[in-house]
Length: 491
Image 1 (spheres, one colour):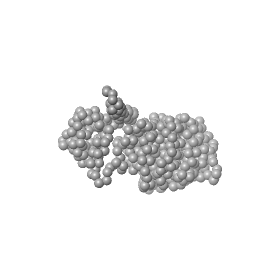
Image 2 (cartoon, rainbow, N blue to C red):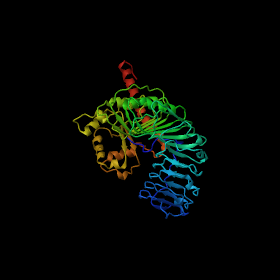
Image 3 (cartoon, one colour):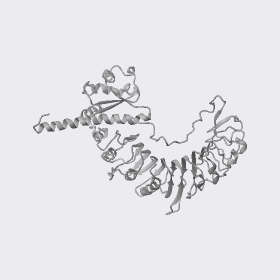
Image 4 (tube, rainbow, N blue to C red):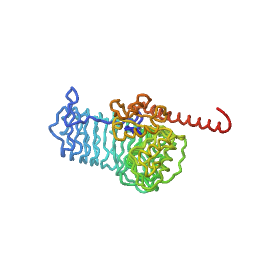
């Protein structure tokens, strides 16, 4: 089964990403502009011998604890400055007053406790996350950053009007580092975020989720939560937290990263999200703990179009495979991707899914029989067999099974049970000569090719479903005909 290497996104969920830092000193245009990479060099101060023409400067992952105006005042054309992972404790933004072209400033992962408010209005990307601020480092001058797209912040406390100075700005992305956040027991704080398309919240990686804060956002399109640790007792805290964030109809893309949870809590989160307007749900680095038992779930109407779960660690060693399989196979969504996981792998399940009958080696292979015998047995009992081919596969030792399959009526010319999928084009000269039947099939049969263009993925999955549905329709008609004959009628 193929694995889509790109995360499912919507076209309006843009993250301002800059990838100009390549190499140590690179001339990257005819105008003699320079990018300088001096990261990981154990620097304690900004080098004094930089070219005045430097536009991109990366001095991240060093030991710089202070920044002076003389360090960068002569870099009049500086556009990008990356100072993340250093030891800065305070910063006066006025040191950038001569850098009027500065657009990208990354000060994340320092030890900043305070900053001044003399900001450069040209900034489009400002990252102050993962620092030691007590409250969010926002002042009224932030309201002058009319070109700002990305804003990263951190704080241990939240106040409802912290972001009021930037309420009129239309940001594309806000990152809130809440790793050090704490609130008094039984106290619920509030934070109003008026305008952003994407909100990313990062919590403490080793603590149970306990953030009880009401965060309200207007026109939120994409939400990402990182570091979520749950058990059956605190599961409702997360659901209540999400209920405040997902109140409007605009949130379409929801991502969870680094999640540790019980199966029971995970099902509860799915149930909460099921009737919401979320269309794309992504879960990365999921750890399942305690037990996996059958849980009640209502498969009502949902807006969900795609669910992707990638990289699963299962710490439950004894569980029912049927519980997992039934839960996911009943989901009536357009695309389900489970990858890098010990759990089951399935393709486009629907309510009337043909994949309820899928052959799983964990369940259907008979102990004591050879792999070849088990594969042939499953193929003979299946309505359809999917072969996913790539140049590497057809030249590998696994492809020698083709010789066995040829003797069990899988590749005969009249067979309509085989679906060929090409991950990428396979030249005829790449197929070993001994696989003559495979060669013949690829010249005689129509096969599906996995499209590189994301816009064509929907059509690919539709063709897969159509191939299975057509076969089931024929089987149903044949069964009806046999029943009709047995009743004494003719057809």
